[in-house]
Image (cartoon, rainbow, N blue to C red; front, side, top):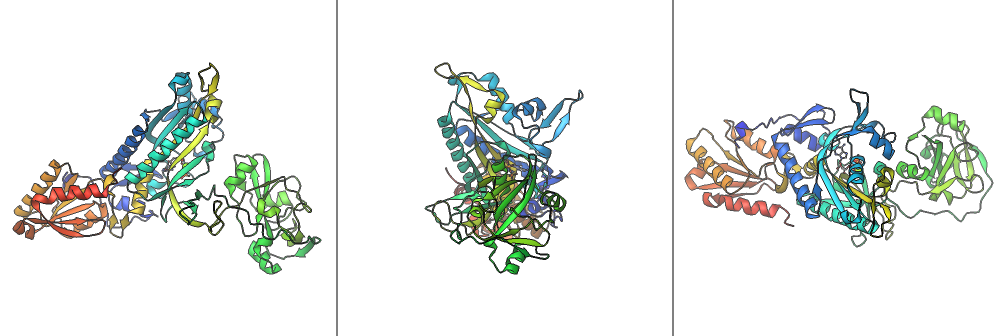
Amino acid sequence: MLVSQLLIPTLRETPAEAEVVSHQLMVRAGFIRKAAAGVYTFLPLAWRVVKKIEAIVREEMDRQGGQEIMMPIIQPAELWQESGRWDVYGPELFRLKDRHGRDFCLGPTHEEIITDLIRGEVNSYKQLPLLLYQIQNKYRDERRPRFGLMRGREFIMKDLYSFDRDQEGLDISYRKMYEAYTRVFQRCGLKFRPVEADSGAIGGNDSHEFMVLAASGEAIVVYCPRESCGYTANVEKAESPPDLFNGREEPKPVELAATPGMRTVDQVASFMGVSPKKLIKTLIYETEKGPVAALVRGDRDVNEIKLKKAVDVINLELAGPEAVERITGAAAGFAGPVGLPGVKMVADQEVESLRNAVSGANRRDCHLVNVNPGRDFKPDMVADIRLIKAGDPCPGCREPLVEASGIEVGQIFKLGTKYSKALGATYLDQNGQVRPIVMGCYGIGVTRTMAAAIEQNHDENGIIWPAAIAPYHVVVIPVNARDKDQFGMARRVYQAMLEAGIEVVLDDRDERPGVKFKDADLVGYPVRVTVGSRSVASGELEMRLRRDGSTSMVPEAELAGSISRFLNSDQETI
Ligand code: ATP
Ligand code: MG
C-alpha cells in the first residue's frame, strides 16, 4: 500500500482524555477513533492488528480441536431468566425491547445461548467432548469505560465453551485451553503470567487469568518470588496462611475508653499506643440479605469478593454514614462487634485469634479495650475475608509474596454443571443414564490484547509492534519522494518485498523526511528502510529496526532476505 492512500490520521498532540499509553498512542498513530464512551471505530491499521490476533487465536483454538461458530449478539431474556442471570447481571447488561415489548439483551457472554444450543443438539455421550468457539463483539455497560480499548463497552472477544461427559473430560479440555492460551500470548509477543483467579459472576470453581504485566494494569497480582514455587494469584483470589501473632495473652476485662474524634485505625492505634494489628476493624455492608459486619484486623483490608462468597450474596455495598448509624446506633468510625444485634457478623480468621483487642464501642467517641472474640462476641461465621498484600507469606512456601499490576487478557473457567443443570443440557451415558453435561468457558479479549501489546511495547516515540501482530512489517521511506532516482529505487525494493510476501508500505507522501520518520516510529512498523541519495549511488539501503534503533546498510539484492530473516526471528516459532 502507498501511505498517501492509506487512512492513517496521525496526530502530533497527545489527546487529553487518554490516560494510558496504549490509548494515547492508538489515537495519535491513527488507529482508532471514539464514537461514544467505550465504543470505537477501528481504522485500517488497527483492523489489521485485530485480524492478526484473531488469526493466531483461531489457529490455536483449531489446533486443540475447537470448531468455530457464530452466535447471535441479540439474546432473548427468557434464556437469561432460565439461568437466573437476568436479575443477577445488573446494570452491566445492555437491555433492550423489541417492537412487541419483549426483553432482549446484547450479549456480554454466551453461556445461555450455547447451552440452549447444546441441549437441543447433543443427547448422547458419543457426541462429547465438544469445543465450540466464536470471535465476536461483546457488550458490557461498564461502570467506568476507560483506557481506550482496555475497558470498552463494545469489544471483541473470543469465547470458547467446552462440553464433556464428566469432570475428567473437563480437566482435559481445561488443560488444552490453558496450553492454547499460553501459545496465543507467546505468539503475540507478550510477557504474561497465568494466575489463579476468582470465577466471579460467571460461576464455577477452578479458574485462571492470563495477565500481561504492565504498570497500567487494573488487576493486582501477587506472586511468590521463588521460581521453584511459582504461586501466582489475582489478589481477588489470593490466600495466605493467617497471622496468629498474639493468641497467647491472658484475657483481661473489657473497658470502655474515650476516643474523641478518633475514627480511623491509625488515629485510634496511635491514641491508644497499640499496633494496628491489635485493632478489630468493623466494616458495615448492605446486601440483599440484610446488613453484614465484616471484621478484619486493623492493618488489613476486606476482600469484598471473598466476603461476597462467604455470605453468599449478589449485591454487597459498603454502607454510607447514615446507614452505619442506623445499623450500629453510632456514628461511622465507632462500629464494633460487641453488642451489635441484627447484623450478620463475619470475622476474618486472624480476628478470631486476637486477644485483648481494641474495637469500636457502637457509641460515638468511644472504643472498647480488651475485647476478646468468643468471650465478648460470637461471630456468625469465621472465614478468610482479608485482602492479601505484598509481604504476606506465600501459601506454598511462606516466602514473602510480591505484588505487580496486570492486564487481564484472558480467563478460563471450569463451570461444571452450573449452566447445564439450570437449562437442562443432559446426555445419555453408555449405560443409558441421564447426566448433566460438564462445561467450561474460556475468553480472550482480542481488542484488550492489542492494547496490552502496546502497553508492553512502546517508547517515547511511539508503538513498537511485535512482528507477529504488526499492522505492516516494513515502511519504505524515500528521503526525497520528488527525486526520481530515489523514488524509483524505493518503488523497486517495495515491489521486491511484496513479491517476497513481506507486508510493506511505501511512504510516497511529499513530506519532509522528519515527518515521515516520526510517523514511522509512531505507527511502530518493526522495520524501516530508508532510500537516500547515497543509496542510489552505492546500491545499499539503510535498514533500521524499530525495537532497538539499530541500523545496517544492506545491498538492494539482499534486502528482502535480510528482512524476512529478521521477521522470522522476531516471531515466536512454536
Ligand atoms: P474484567 O475483570 O477486566 O472486567 P472480566 O473478568 O469481566 O474482565 P471475562 O468475562 O473473563 O472478563 O472476559 C474474558 C476477557 O474479555 C477478559 O479476560 C478480557 O480480556 C476481555 N474483556 C472483558 N471485559 C472487557 C472490556 N470491558 N473491554 C475489553 N475487553 C474486555
Ligand atoms: Mg475475567
